[in-house]
Length: 204
Image (tube, rainbow, N blue to C red; front, side, top):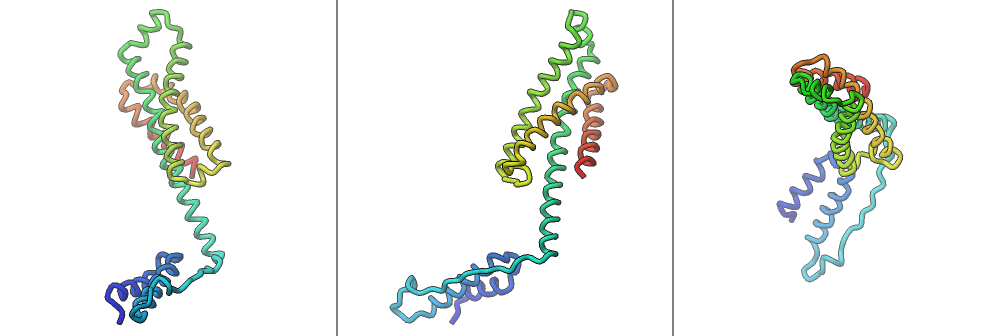
């Protein structure tokens, strides 16, 4: 007689068709359970068993195309998520510049003798130092989840350079907005939307 748990396992093996590569393992466990459950009294179950080997068929062209499309779609979605996250950071750098301009703190610095080149260069260096921290976190997350399209040996240096160059390129593009807006929150929302629009359309 087959016990109820074993019958449930058999039903699961025969009708659960999602784990394709696990099917052989499940069936092997079920067959070994049936064999060892029907051994004569006194026989050691450890000395009896069924060995199984699996030789799956090669994927068809349609299956290969589907898997390639699924992998590419996943990589594109991941890149859009990274762009979405990184779009907020450069937009936040403008908040302090707008606040300094509106409160006349920047004017006071210039009157006190601060060179405008030094002022903007110092802002850029400080913003890049702040930008490197989330860049490092993004790279660390990619390394933890081993997304091959981003962290494989040929692609990881490109990912690091792209993230760094993105910060170097987008941060100076945000600075002119400090002369356009007078409300920091409005500038933050508008610039974030602009970054998202450019980044997502460029990726797609």
